[in-house]
Image (tube, rainbow, N blue to C red; front, top):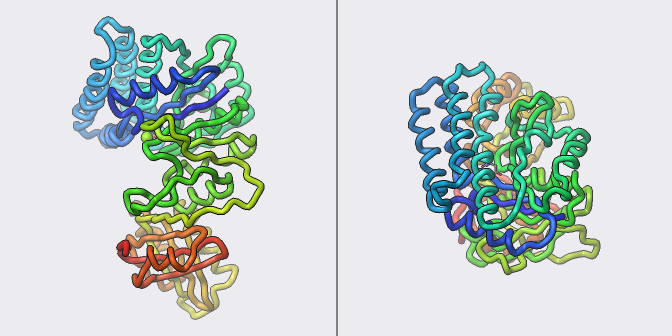
Length: 421
Ligand code: ASP
Ligand code: MG
């Protein structure tokens, strides 16, 4: 059995759905198709959720936009008497009923029960379209089988229970193709949860792990994992093979190609992960797998934006020692800020975190109780894996860095305004 994952960009329009169908058609054997919400639907649903939660009348207009976007696609794919219209109507009514009811006080709970409609709608359209094209498949509402705790918006999977439920649900004696949603899941008591933005890759990896898939393919709008973002670096090239370890490091440093949680489930079962282009389904793309031999990789360049660089100095001139550091880490954990680089001296500690404007001022106030705080907002963190002096010269040039750090494999630079040389 194989798992294919199609992201929002791959099914953003009529041509995308047709293309998915042709890729699935060329595949023989057992298959699970995991799909994200179409195009930018999840962003639109976020605005809908905010409007609903804050009782803003805009929700009616946003709901209309959501319907029109999907109906436009559907009208160009199906004849008028297709069952897809009834299936979609049920979903739209379900969402409208939520919007007409009073919200609870828990934003995250409301978020998950609204945001899931993106994936429910896309998979309904895709399952019905494949059927119309003669590709028999079974639609699965994954919320019933992938079970999580109640940590809404970033739920944690109950692997044991999910394994049992998924093995029964994905019964390949009844169908050889299943279509299901990425990103969403459910609690034991059937409340909807989600796995974090862009979490569909993670769903694909989880299902592969639980059901012992042969391999997973993530279909993207790029030709594979590249050694730089081709929009930023014209000499970017595809890396044809890479280890799990390299892939997990790259996503940690900010490469957007795969969701960071994706690698562990497939590594644990030694399942290869392919990253391939849905625009050129015949090219091979990248395979991520266990690689024993020392594989020489080209320099890989990652630009992580929206960073904040902070430098803390204890007000009483005491050393930055273990207790001070553990206090700083506790504050970071409290505000769920991701630490991306750190450096200390006798009486100062500098670090780079993802900027989260919603909590930043409160975070600063808390630190200021003990430290003098200096910071630069909106800096960039440039990471170069497998670096050499030539590539550093090419990427960084004379741009002065605020902090610089090198290990044997990785060089990192915090820059104010990064301009390619
Ligand atoms: N639709 C969700 C999002 O946009 C999940 C995903 O695309 O992986 O975040
Ligand atoms: Mg998406």
